[in-house]
Image (cartoon, rainbow, N blue to C red; front, side, top):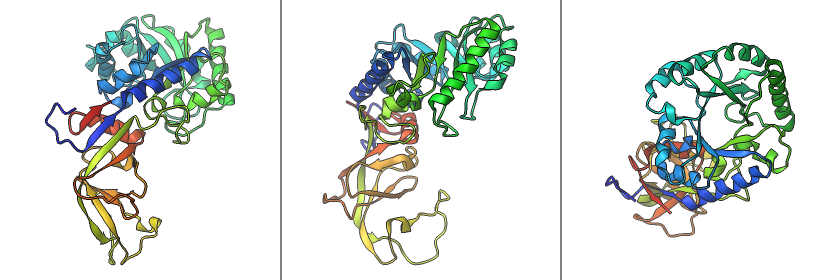
Length: 369
Protein backbone atom coordinates (compact mmCIF):
# COMPACT_ATOMS: atom_id res chain seq x y z
CA UNK A 1 0.00 0.00 0.00
CA UNK A 2 2.72 2.45 0.95
CA UNK A 3 6.10 1.78 -0.58
CA UNK A 4 7.49 5.28 0.04
CA UNK A 5 7.07 5.35 3.84
CA UNK A 6 4.33 7.91 3.50
CA UNK A 7 1.91 8.46 6.38
CA UNK A 8 -1.06 6.08 6.23
CA UNK A 9 -3.47 9.02 5.91
CA UNK A 10 -4.65 10.70 3.84
CA UNK A 11 -5.23 7.59 1.75
CA UNK A 12 -6.50 7.24 -1.82
CA UNK A 13 -8.54 4.03 -2.07
CA UNK A 14 -8.77 2.58 -5.58
CA UNK A 15 -11.23 -0.19 -6.44
CA UNK A 16 -9.72 -1.59 -9.62
CA UNK A 17 -12.57 -4.07 -10.08
CA UNK A 18 -15.04 -1.18 -10.43
CA UNK A 19 -12.86 0.49 -13.04
CA UNK A 20 -12.58 -2.70 -15.07
CA UNK A 21 -16.31 -3.37 -14.76
CA UNK A 22 -17.19 0.12 -15.99
CA UNK A 23 -14.85 -0.14 -18.95
CA UNK A 24 -16.27 -3.53 -19.92
CA UNK A 25 -19.88 -2.28 -19.74
CA UNK A 26 -19.12 0.75 -21.88
CA UNK A 27 -17.16 -1.31 -24.41
CA UNK A 28 -20.06 -3.78 -24.71
CA UNK A 29 -22.67 -1.02 -25.10
CA UNK A 30 -20.68 0.69 -27.82
CA UNK A 31 -19.83 -2.54 -29.62
CA UNK A 32 -23.57 -3.14 -30.17
CA UNK A 33 -23.53 0.08 -32.25
CA UNK A 34 -20.28 -0.86 -34.05
CA UNK A 35 -18.40 1.75 -32.03
CA UNK A 36 -15.07 1.13 -30.35
CA UNK A 37 -14.79 2.68 -26.88
CA UNK A 38 -11.25 3.74 -26.02
CA UNK A 39 -10.63 4.55 -22.34
CA UNK A 40 -8.97 7.93 -21.86
CA UNK A 41 -6.21 7.47 -19.28
CA UNK A 42 -5.08 11.08 -18.88
CA UNK A 43 -6.84 11.58 -15.52
CA UNK A 44 -4.61 8.82 -14.13
CA UNK A 45 -1.56 11.05 -14.77
CA UNK A 46 0.60 8.03 -15.49
CA UNK A 47 -0.48 6.14 -12.35
CA UNK A 48 -0.20 2.68 -13.89
CA UNK A 49 -2.10 0.55 -11.32
CA UNK A 50 -5.33 2.45 -12.04
CA UNK A 51 -4.72 2.78 -15.77
CA UNK A 52 -4.10 -0.97 -15.96
CA UNK A 53 -7.55 -1.62 -14.52
CA UNK A 54 -9.12 0.01 -17.59
CA UNK A 55 -6.71 -1.79 -19.91
CA UNK A 56 -7.71 -5.12 -18.32
CA UNK A 57 -11.21 -4.63 -19.76
CA UNK A 58 -9.73 -5.46 -23.15
CA UNK A 59 -10.37 -2.30 -25.18
CA UNK A 60 -9.24 -2.07 -28.79
CA UNK A 61 -7.21 0.98 -27.82
CA UNK A 62 -6.62 3.75 -25.30
CA UNK A 63 -6.01 7.49 -25.39
CA UNK A 64 -3.82 9.71 -23.25
CA UNK A 65 -2.47 13.24 -23.39
CA UNK A 66 1.10 12.17 -22.55
CA UNK A 67 3.42 10.36 -24.95
CA UNK A 68 5.46 9.00 -22.06
CA UNK A 69 2.42 7.60 -20.28
CA UNK A 70 1.29 5.87 -23.47
CA UNK A 71 4.72 4.29 -23.78
CA UNK A 72 4.61 3.18 -20.15
CA UNK A 73 1.45 1.10 -20.57
CA UNK A 74 3.44 -1.52 -22.46
CA UNK A 75 4.20 -3.01 -19.04
CA UNK A 76 0.51 -3.24 -18.08
CA UNK A 77 -1.18 -6.63 -18.08
CA UNK A 78 -3.24 -7.16 -21.21
CA UNK A 79 -1.72 -4.19 -23.03
CA UNK A 80 -0.30 -6.24 -25.90
CA UNK A 81 -1.83 -5.23 -29.21
CA UNK A 82 -3.76 -2.29 -27.79
CA UNK A 83 -3.68 0.79 -30.02
CA UNK A 84 -2.52 4.04 -28.49
CA UNK A 85 -3.68 7.48 -29.43
CA UNK A 86 -2.22 10.80 -28.31
CA UNK A 87 -5.14 13.21 -27.96
CA UNK A 88 -3.16 16.28 -26.94
CA UNK A 89 -2.02 18.53 -29.76
CA UNK A 90 1.79 18.47 -29.77
CA UNK A 91 3.98 21.40 -30.70
CA UNK A 92 7.30 20.80 -32.41
CA UNK A 93 9.19 21.34 -29.14
CA UNK A 94 6.95 18.86 -27.32
CA UNK A 95 7.41 16.24 -30.02
CA UNK A 96 11.17 16.76 -29.97
CA UNK A 97 11.26 16.27 -26.20
CA UNK A 98 9.20 13.07 -26.57
CA UNK A 99 11.31 11.39 -29.26
CA UNK A 100 11.94 8.31 -27.11
CA UNK A 101 8.21 7.58 -26.93
CA UNK A 102 6.82 8.50 -30.34
CA UNK A 103 7.33 5.05 -31.86
CA UNK A 104 4.93 3.65 -29.24
CA UNK A 105 2.04 5.81 -30.48
CA UNK A 106 -0.31 4.63 -33.22
CA UNK A 107 -2.04 7.91 -34.05
CA UNK A 108 -1.81 11.58 -33.19
CA UNK A 109 -4.55 14.20 -32.94
CA UNK A 110 -3.76 17.36 -34.93
CA UNK A 111 -5.54 20.60 -35.81
CA UNK A 112 -2.90 22.74 -37.48
CA UNK A 113 -0.57 22.32 -40.44
CA UNK A 114 2.35 22.98 -38.08
CA UNK A 115 1.41 19.80 -36.17
CA UNK A 116 1.56 17.75 -39.37
CA UNK A 117 4.88 19.24 -40.43
CA UNK A 118 6.37 18.51 -37.02
CA UNK A 119 5.09 14.93 -37.15
CA UNK A 120 6.57 14.49 -40.61
CA UNK A 121 9.89 15.63 -39.18
CA UNK A 122 9.99 13.61 -35.97
CA UNK A 123 7.61 10.71 -36.67
CA UNK A 124 7.45 10.12 -40.45
CA UNK A 125 4.69 7.71 -41.40
CA UNK A 126 2.54 8.78 -38.44
CA UNK A 127 -1.22 8.42 -38.65
CA UNK A 128 -3.00 11.70 -37.97
CA UNK A 129 -6.53 12.23 -36.67
CA UNK A 130 -7.90 15.66 -37.57
CA UNK A 131 -9.62 17.35 -34.63
CA UNK A 132 -12.62 19.30 -35.92
CA UNK A 133 -14.41 21.93 -33.87
CA UNK A 134 -18.16 21.33 -33.85
CA UNK A 135 -19.10 23.54 -30.92
CA UNK A 136 -16.76 23.11 -27.98
CA UNK A 137 -14.70 26.11 -29.14
CA UNK A 138 -11.50 24.64 -27.82
CA UNK A 139 -9.04 23.02 -30.24
CA UNK A 140 -10.14 21.97 -33.71
CA UNK A 141 -10.37 22.88 -37.38
CA UNK A 142 -13.54 24.92 -38.07
CA UNK A 143 -15.93 22.76 -40.08
CA UNK A 144 -16.15 25.36 -42.85
CA UNK A 145 -12.35 25.28 -43.22
CA UNK A 146 -11.92 21.49 -43.42
CA UNK A 147 -11.60 21.37 -47.21
CA UNK A 148 -8.92 24.05 -47.26
CA UNK A 149 -7.07 22.32 -44.44
CA UNK A 150 -7.09 18.99 -46.25
CA UNK A 151 -5.81 20.60 -49.44
CA UNK A 152 -2.66 21.56 -47.54
CA UNK A 153 -2.50 18.48 -45.30
CA UNK A 154 -2.57 15.97 -48.16
CA UNK A 155 0.53 17.60 -49.65
CA UNK A 156 2.56 16.44 -46.64
CA UNK A 157 3.46 13.01 -47.99
CA UNK A 158 5.14 11.60 -44.89
CA UNK A 159 1.87 11.67 -42.92
CA UNK A 160 -1.16 9.39 -43.22
CA UNK A 161 -4.48 11.20 -42.69
CA UNK A 162 -6.09 8.43 -40.66
CA UNK A 163 -9.23 9.87 -39.13
CA UNK A 164 -11.33 12.75 -37.89
CA UNK A 165 -12.58 13.57 -34.42
CA UNK A 166 -14.67 16.11 -32.56
CA UNK A 167 -15.29 17.02 -28.95
CA UNK A 168 -18.04 18.35 -26.70
CA UNK A 169 -18.68 19.35 -23.09
CA UNK A 170 -15.02 19.89 -22.17
CA UNK A 171 -14.74 23.66 -22.47
CA UNK A 172 -17.88 25.38 -23.72
CA UNK A 173 -20.26 22.80 -22.29
CA UNK A 174 -22.09 22.26 -25.59
CA UNK A 175 -24.24 19.11 -25.42
CA UNK A 176 -23.72 16.74 -28.36
CA UNK A 177 -27.08 16.27 -30.07
CA UNK A 178 -28.01 14.09 -33.00
CA UNK A 179 -28.27 17.24 -35.14
CA UNK A 180 -24.81 18.44 -34.17
CA UNK A 181 -23.31 15.01 -34.88
CA UNK A 182 -25.06 14.79 -38.25
CA UNK A 183 -23.65 18.19 -39.23
CA UNK A 184 -20.17 17.01 -38.18
CA UNK A 185 -20.52 13.91 -40.35
CA UNK A 186 -21.84 15.95 -43.27
CA UNK A 187 -18.71 18.11 -43.24
CA UNK A 188 -16.52 15.03 -43.10
CA UNK A 189 -18.28 13.23 -45.94
CA UNK A 190 -18.20 16.33 -48.12
CA UNK A 191 -14.44 16.56 -47.56
CA UNK A 192 -13.97 12.85 -48.27
CA UNK A 193 -15.82 13.20 -51.57
CA UNK A 194 -13.94 16.33 -52.62
CA UNK A 195 -10.49 14.89 -51.89
CA UNK A 196 -11.11 11.24 -52.75
CA UNK A 197 -10.23 9.93 -49.31
CA UNK A 198 -11.98 7.96 -46.58
CA UNK A 199 -11.35 8.47 -42.88
CA UNK A 200 -10.77 5.18 -41.09
CA UNK A 201 -11.52 6.48 -37.60
CA UNK A 202 -14.42 8.81 -36.85
CA UNK A 203 -14.12 9.62 -33.16
CA UNK A 204 -17.40 11.27 -32.19
CA UNK A 205 -16.51 12.61 -28.77
CA UNK A 206 -16.04 11.76 -25.12
CA UNK A 207 -18.23 10.21 -22.42
CA UNK A 208 -20.86 12.90 -23.13
CA UNK A 209 -21.83 10.86 -26.20
CA UNK A 210 -22.94 7.82 -24.18
CA UNK A 211 -26.56 8.92 -23.84
CA UNK A 212 -26.89 9.21 -27.63
CA UNK A 213 -25.32 5.78 -28.01
CA UNK A 214 -27.73 4.31 -25.46
CA UNK A 215 -30.65 5.75 -27.40
CA UNK A 216 -29.16 4.60 -30.72
CA UNK A 217 -29.19 8.17 -32.05
CA UNK A 218 -25.53 8.39 -33.02
CA UNK A 219 -24.71 8.84 -36.69
CA UNK A 220 -23.66 5.52 -38.21
CA UNK A 221 -20.33 6.90 -39.40
CA UNK A 222 -19.14 7.39 -35.83
CA UNK A 223 -17.03 4.35 -35.00
CA UNK A 224 -15.10 5.51 -31.94
CA UNK A 225 -15.59 7.37 -28.66
CA UNK A 226 -13.12 8.48 -26.03
CA UNK A 227 -14.35 7.75 -22.52
CA UNK A 228 -12.62 8.73 -19.29
CA UNK A 229 -14.97 10.10 -16.64
CA UNK A 230 -17.57 7.38 -17.21
CA UNK A 231 -14.93 4.66 -16.81
CA UNK A 232 -13.22 6.01 -13.72
CA UNK A 233 -16.09 7.77 -11.93
CA UNK A 234 -19.25 6.21 -13.35
CA UNK A 235 -20.79 9.66 -13.77
CA UNK A 236 -22.63 11.46 -16.55
CA UNK A 237 -20.32 14.11 -18.00
CA UNK A 238 -23.24 16.41 -18.82
CA UNK A 239 -24.96 16.35 -15.42
CA UNK A 240 -22.28 14.92 -13.08
CA UNK A 241 -24.94 12.53 -11.83
CA UNK A 242 -24.24 8.81 -11.30
CA UNK A 243 -24.95 6.61 -14.31
CA UNK A 244 -27.26 3.89 -13.00
CA UNK A 245 -25.64 1.01 -14.87
CA UNK A 246 -22.09 1.98 -13.91
CA UNK A 247 -20.13 1.70 -10.67
CA UNK A 248 -19.37 4.81 -8.62
CA UNK A 249 -16.70 5.58 -6.03
CA UNK A 250 -13.93 3.57 -7.65
CA UNK A 251 -11.76 6.29 -6.10
CA UNK A 252 -12.27 7.63 -2.59
CA UNK A 253 -10.02 9.43 -0.14
CA UNK A 254 -9.90 8.67 3.58
CA UNK A 255 -8.55 11.24 6.01
CA UNK A 256 -7.93 11.11 9.74
CA UNK A 257 -9.50 13.44 12.28
CA UNK A 258 -6.71 15.19 14.17
CA UNK A 259 -8.88 17.65 16.10
CA UNK A 260 -12.52 17.25 17.08
CA UNK A 261 -14.38 19.64 19.36
CA UNK A 262 -17.31 22.01 19.64
CA UNK A 263 -16.59 25.45 18.23
CA UNK A 264 -18.47 28.53 17.25
CA UNK A 265 -19.57 28.22 13.66
CA UNK A 266 -18.64 31.81 12.83
CA UNK A 267 -17.43 34.79 14.81
CA UNK A 268 -18.58 38.38 14.59
CA UNK A 269 -16.14 40.74 12.96
CA UNK A 270 -14.85 41.94 9.65
CA UNK A 271 -13.95 39.04 7.39
CA UNK A 272 -11.75 39.12 4.33
CA UNK A 273 -10.27 36.61 1.92
CA UNK A 274 -8.45 33.59 3.26
CA UNK A 275 -5.00 32.43 2.11
CA UNK A 276 -6.53 31.12 -1.14
CA UNK A 277 -8.39 34.30 -2.12
CA UNK A 278 -11.73 32.91 -0.96
CA UNK A 279 -14.47 34.35 1.19
CA UNK A 280 -16.16 31.42 2.92
CA UNK A 281 -19.95 31.67 2.55
CA UNK A 282 -21.30 30.53 5.90
CA UNK A 283 -24.76 31.87 5.06
CA UNK A 284 -25.43 29.13 2.51
CA UNK A 285 -25.89 26.65 5.38
CA UNK A 286 -27.85 29.18 7.45
CA UNK A 287 -24.99 29.56 9.94
CA UNK A 288 -25.25 32.61 12.17
CA UNK A 289 -22.77 34.23 14.58
CA UNK A 290 -22.99 32.73 18.06
CA UNK A 291 -24.19 29.29 16.90
CA UNK A 292 -22.00 26.36 17.90
CA UNK A 293 -21.35 23.10 16.16
CA UNK A 294 -18.94 20.19 16.29
CA UNK A 295 -15.97 20.79 14.07
CA UNK A 296 -13.52 18.17 12.76
CA UNK A 297 -10.08 19.05 11.44
CA UNK A 298 -8.68 16.37 9.12
CA UNK A 299 -5.17 15.73 7.84
CA UNK A 300 -6.05 16.41 4.22
CA UNK A 301 -5.32 19.72 2.57
CA UNK A 302 -4.74 21.52 -0.66
CA UNK A 303 -1.11 20.52 -0.70
CA UNK A 304 -2.25 16.94 -1.27
CA UNK A 305 -4.60 17.60 -4.19
CA UNK A 306 -7.57 19.66 -5.38
CA UNK A 307 -9.79 19.04 -2.36
CA UNK A 308 -12.49 21.43 -3.56
CA UNK A 309 -13.79 18.54 -5.65
CA UNK A 310 -14.59 16.09 -2.84
CA UNK A 311 -17.89 15.08 -1.24
CA UNK A 312 -18.40 13.35 2.14
CA UNK A 313 -19.73 9.81 1.89
CA UNK A 314 -21.18 9.92 5.40
CA UNK A 315 -24.52 11.60 6.08
CA UNK A 316 -24.40 14.64 8.33
CA UNK A 317 -20.84 15.60 7.38
CA UNK A 318 -20.30 18.88 5.52
CA UNK A 319 -17.07 20.26 4.13
CA UNK A 320 -16.67 23.87 5.26
CA UNK A 321 -13.36 24.52 3.52
CA UNK A 322 -9.71 23.65 3.37
CA UNK A 323 -6.29 25.17 3.96
CA UNK A 324 -2.86 23.93 2.91
CA UNK A 325 -2.72 21.15 5.50
CA UNK A 326 -6.27 20.72 6.78
CA UNK A 327 -9.81 19.97 5.73
CA UNK A 328 -12.44 21.60 7.95
CA UNK A 329 -15.69 19.66 8.31
CA UNK A 330 -18.91 20.37 10.19
CA UNK A 331 -19.90 17.08 11.85
CA UNK A 332 -22.62 18.42 14.15
CA UNK A 333 -25.33 16.45 12.33
CA UNK A 334 -23.35 13.22 11.93
CA UNK A 335 -24.99 10.23 13.59
CA UNK A 336 -21.64 8.68 14.52
CA UNK A 337 -19.78 9.85 17.63
CA UNK A 338 -16.55 10.92 15.98
CA UNK A 339 -13.27 11.52 17.80
CA UNK A 340 -9.60 12.10 17.08
CA UNK A 341 -8.12 9.13 15.25
CA UNK A 342 -11.37 8.28 13.44
CA UNK A 343 -11.44 8.56 9.66
CA UNK A 344 -13.90 10.04 7.21
CA UNK A 345 -14.17 9.09 3.57
CA UNK A 346 -14.91 11.28 0.57
CA UNK A 347 -15.81 10.79 -3.09
CA UNK A 348 -13.84 12.62 -5.78
CA UNK A 349 -15.01 14.52 -8.84
CA UNK A 350 -12.99 14.60 -12.06
CA UNK A 351 -10.84 17.59 -11.10
CA UNK A 352 -10.04 16.08 -7.70
CA UNK A 353 -9.31 12.70 -9.27
CA UNK A 354 -6.83 14.08 -11.76
CA UNK A 355 -4.92 16.06 -9.16
CA UNK A 356 -5.00 13.18 -6.66
CA UNK A 357 -3.50 10.76 -9.18
CA UNK A 358 -0.57 13.10 -9.68
CA UNK A 359 0.35 12.58 -6.05
CA UNK A 360 -0.64 8.94 -5.48
CA UNK A 361 2.36 7.07 -4.14
CA UNK A 362 4.46 10.24 -4.17
CA UNK A 363 2.80 12.64 -1.74
CA UNK A 364 -0.20 10.63 -0.61
CA UNK A 365 -0.64 6.96 0.20
CA UNK A 366 -2.83 4.68 -1.85
CA UNK A 367 -4.38 1.23 -1.60
CA UNK A 368 -5.68 -1.09 -4.32
CA UNK A 369 -8.71 -3.35 -4.02
